[in-house]
Length: 118
Image (cartoon, rainbow, N blue to C red; front, side, top):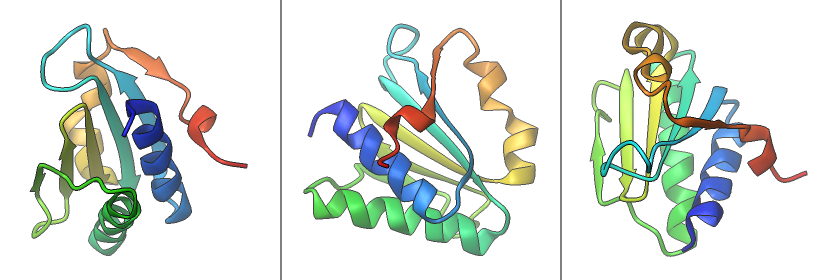
Protein backbone atom coordinates (compact mmCIF):
# COMPACT_ATOMS: atom_id res chain seq x y z
CA UNK A 1 0.00 0.00 0.00
CA UNK A 2 1.28 3.46 -0.87
CA UNK A 3 2.07 5.78 2.04
CA UNK A 4 -0.56 8.32 0.95
CA UNK A 5 -3.27 5.65 0.92
CA UNK A 6 -2.18 4.38 4.33
CA UNK A 7 -2.23 7.95 5.67
CA UNK A 8 -5.69 8.55 4.21
CA UNK A 9 -7.10 5.30 5.63
CA UNK A 10 -5.63 5.90 9.09
CA UNK A 11 -6.70 9.56 9.31
CA UNK A 12 -10.24 8.67 8.23
CA UNK A 13 -10.38 5.84 10.78
CA UNK A 14 -9.27 8.20 13.55
CA UNK A 15 -11.76 10.85 12.45
CA UNK A 16 -14.61 8.32 12.35
CA UNK A 17 -14.08 7.57 16.06
CA UNK A 18 -13.85 11.27 16.95
CA UNK A 19 -10.07 11.38 17.37
CA UNK A 20 -9.02 14.84 18.48
CA UNK A 21 -6.28 17.14 17.23
CA UNK A 22 -5.26 14.97 14.26
CA UNK A 23 -1.79 15.83 13.05
CA UNK A 24 0.32 14.39 10.21
CA UNK A 25 4.04 15.14 10.28
CA UNK A 26 6.43 14.22 7.46
CA UNK A 27 9.63 13.19 9.26
CA UNK A 28 11.37 11.16 6.55
CA UNK A 29 14.02 13.84 5.97
CA UNK A 30 14.86 13.91 9.70
CA UNK A 31 14.97 10.27 10.76
CA UNK A 32 15.09 6.69 9.55
CA UNK A 33 12.31 5.75 12.00
CA UNK A 34 9.50 6.48 9.53
CA UNK A 35 8.44 8.73 6.69
CA UNK A 36 5.34 10.00 8.49
CA UNK A 37 3.94 10.26 12.00
CA UNK A 38 0.23 10.54 12.65
CA UNK A 39 -0.79 11.91 16.04
CA UNK A 40 -4.27 11.79 17.54
CA UNK A 41 -5.81 12.16 20.99
CA UNK A 42 -8.67 10.55 22.84
CA UNK A 43 -10.43 11.78 25.95
CA UNK A 44 -10.29 8.46 27.81
CA UNK A 45 -8.39 5.18 27.75
CA UNK A 46 -11.49 3.57 26.26
CA UNK A 47 -11.49 6.03 23.37
CA UNK A 48 -7.73 5.63 22.87
CA UNK A 49 -8.23 1.86 22.51
CA UNK A 50 -11.21 2.37 20.19
CA UNK A 51 -9.14 4.68 17.98
CA UNK A 52 -6.32 2.13 17.76
CA UNK A 53 -8.77 -0.72 17.09
CA UNK A 54 -10.44 1.21 14.27
CA UNK A 55 -7.13 2.04 12.59
CA UNK A 56 -6.00 -1.58 12.81
CA UNK A 57 -9.36 -2.83 11.50
CA UNK A 58 -9.47 -0.52 8.49
CA UNK A 59 -5.86 -1.12 7.53
CA UNK A 60 -6.23 -4.87 7.96
CA UNK A 61 -9.13 -4.74 5.48
CA UNK A 62 -6.59 -3.37 3.00
CA UNK A 63 -4.04 -6.07 3.80
CA UNK A 64 -1.87 -4.04 6.18
CA UNK A 65 -0.95 -5.19 9.68
CA UNK A 66 1.21 -3.25 12.11
CA UNK A 67 4.75 -4.55 12.43
CA UNK A 68 4.63 -3.65 16.10
CA UNK A 69 2.06 -2.36 18.57
CA UNK A 70 2.98 -0.83 21.94
CA UNK A 71 1.03 0.60 24.86
CA UNK A 72 -2.32 -1.09 24.34
CA UNK A 73 -2.59 -2.37 27.92
CA UNK A 74 -2.09 1.03 29.55
CA UNK A 75 -3.91 2.93 26.79
CA UNK A 76 -2.28 6.26 27.62
CA UNK A 77 -0.15 6.15 24.46
CA UNK A 78 -0.64 3.47 21.83
CA UNK A 79 1.86 3.23 18.99
CA UNK A 80 0.99 1.39 15.78
CA UNK A 81 4.11 0.90 13.65
CA UNK A 82 3.46 0.39 9.95
CA UNK A 83 7.18 0.95 9.12
CA UNK A 84 6.84 4.03 6.88
CA UNK A 85 3.91 5.41 8.89
CA UNK A 86 3.90 5.36 12.69
CA UNK A 87 0.63 6.22 14.39
CA UNK A 88 0.67 7.68 17.91
CA UNK A 89 -2.66 7.69 19.75
CA UNK A 90 -2.56 9.49 23.08
CA UNK A 91 -4.74 10.23 26.05
CA UNK A 92 -4.99 14.04 25.90
CA UNK A 93 -2.93 14.65 29.05
CA UNK A 94 -0.20 12.24 27.96
CA UNK A 95 0.05 13.99 24.60
CA UNK A 96 0.49 17.35 26.30
CA UNK A 97 3.21 15.94 28.54
CA UNK A 98 5.32 14.36 25.76
CA UNK A 99 4.61 17.10 23.19
CA UNK A 100 5.84 15.23 20.10
CA UNK A 101 4.91 18.21 17.95
CA UNK A 102 7.65 20.19 19.68
CA UNK A 103 10.16 17.33 19.43
CA UNK A 104 9.50 16.96 15.69
CA UNK A 105 8.97 20.67 14.96
CA UNK A 106 11.52 20.51 12.13
CA UNK A 107 9.28 18.05 10.28
CA UNK A 108 6.80 19.11 7.63
CA UNK A 109 3.36 19.51 9.21
CA UNK A 110 0.66 18.44 6.77
CA UNK A 111 -3.00 19.39 6.97
CA UNK A 112 -4.76 16.24 8.19
CA UNK A 113 -8.04 17.49 6.72
CA UNK A 114 -6.59 17.01 3.23
CA UNK A 115 -6.63 13.26 3.88
CA UNK A 116 -10.29 13.14 4.94
CA UNK A 117 -12.92 11.72 2.61
CA UNK A 118 -15.93 13.92 2.03
